[in-house]
Amino acid sequence: MAKVLVVTSGKGGVGKTTSTAAIGAALAKTGKNVVVVDFDVGLRNLDIVMGAERRVVFDMINVIQGDAKLAQALIRDKRIETLSILPASQTRDKDALTSEGVAQVIAELREKFDWVICDSPAGIERGASLAMHHADVALIVTNPEVSSVRDSDRIIGLLDSKTERASKGERIEKHLLLTRYDPVRAARGDMLKTEDVLEILSIPLLGIIPESPEVLRASNLGTPVTLANPEAAPARAYMDAAKRLLGEQIPMTVPGEKTSLLGKLFGRRVA
Amino acid sequence: MSFFSFLSRKPTATIARDRLQILLAHERATFGGNADLVAVLQEEILAVIAKHVSVEREKVQVKLDRGDSFSTLEIGVEIPPGLAEKQAAAKKAALGA
Image (cartoon, rainbow over all chains, first blue to last red):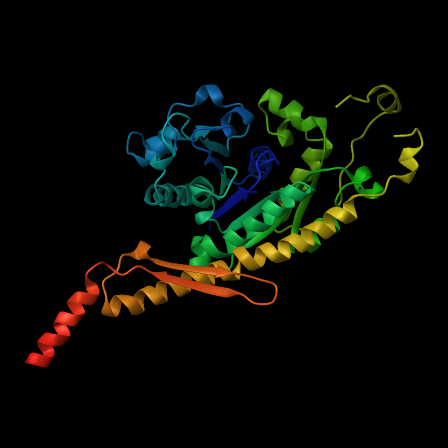
């Protein structure tokens, strides 16, 4: 049975696209057939984060309007053969994304893949509601910061009331992914702790991704962080989160960077 | 800011948590259950009115204002012009028959 997962947050810039790429690649590494779908019409970025920006020929709107077959629009990842990407249109009008069209594309993707991961645009407008509409599982990406937590709370409300599952009276499985977490600042009392965020949002925790320069390095390269440097702290955290999605029981930890003594002495970066 | 000011710096995370808890309790009440309640009320009120009068969807406004001690439900229905005259004429015709 294919699962449709939406990666959403309400707020922009919290790590939806990074997380979509990282978890998509992590799931594909375990042998699952995975497609990552960009829903951000006009501001597509999943292609560049995945390093596929020069291979985009057709996009989801071309498929919806019948200008291309789904197979023509799907881009197979060069590193992992079980991973594909369906890009969003960069030029078309957002209204070209019709709900019937999206329903049809998702139904077709369900037949081809084990996991359909929808990267939602920020906000609570049309694009975001279309991205979440068909989801079986939702990943709510949240930073330990007041505006992000507030927006996540709003998104959780929409997931419970406006999705296809909600309209059928079924439950949508929700998970929290806490990103850009800094255990040192949290321990010092200057950042919301994991427990604080969990208490406020009251949804189960899928993973804690530590703040790390590796995330920017990976996007510079156009490689999901789980492939760019699998030993890096955020990569291990994303890998664990992906395994938990598959039902594995993995103790919840915040992976730390492994730094040498020299690295500790000289490796301090300005930002 | 003095050199030793960092010693007296208070942790801010608890303030963030408390502010969020208060705000979200309010927002959940506004966007959560009540948003749906308003939608349901709007549909049902529209259905009742439509039984007797033909009104456009946008002409039925339902608004819920939540206060601390009480909340108010405001319903505005704009009836098409000339409806009262038509009804009066219909009544007359019925009486005359």
